[in-house]
Amino acid sequence: MYGFGPMNMMWDRTYILIIIGMVLSMLASAYVSRTFKKYADVKTKKGYTGAQVAQMILDVNNIQNVAVQPIRGELNDNYNSATKILSLSEPVANVQSVSAIGVAAHECGHAVQDAVGYKPLIWRAALVPIANFGTQVSFPLIIAGLFFGKFLITAGIVCFSAALVFQLVTLPVEFNASARALRILNEQEILDQEEMSMARHVLFAAALTYVAAAFASVLQLLRLIMIYGDRRN
Image 1: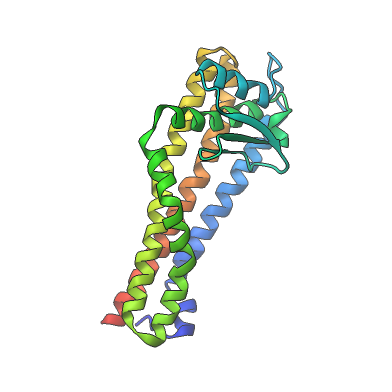
Image 2: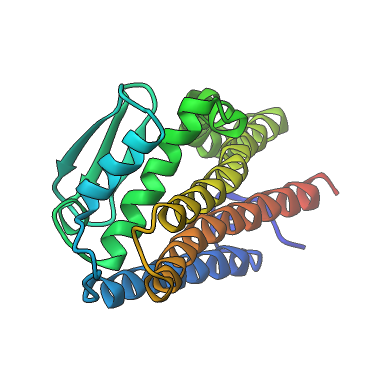
């Protein structure tokens, strides 16, 4: 028996699922950081910065309503479809490296998705408020259910599932953005074939972080379902 008291819920044997998820996420994060730093030391032959490549890709795709801006930090690059702002971190915006160009092109991939109405990107944007709400209330509901009734636990699991759906929808969005980025870099001959191979390594490493996060959430959901099922029995 797993038990379903307040302490047992936190320390029962199914906690191994959470540990596995945490380890995978940390390994993925360490791998992307190491890969980015490795190719951040490789200056591209044409000497473009990440910001220059981003603007080139936007121009080639006739995207005139997206602004490119530098931001402080590292590996926090992003594209905001609501504000039409493509933000590039300091190691990307003004650096002439394979890593910088790969990351900048990936974020431009999201801008292209937005411009062509890529459905998974639209679905992900619609899921943001639902996922945020689910993340905030799922565990408070589950804890409350320990004292006030199983229906609250069920509600908490459903809310957590909504957050998981967001992460699963994110996967094709990220993989598609990377595929678009690599195709554009190749077609526009921004990188040569050797540099393209390096850029693929950078984008593959970044994709692993999303896969690991989704897998960790699946394990978390499985744990909650296992514990709840044991309580019902």
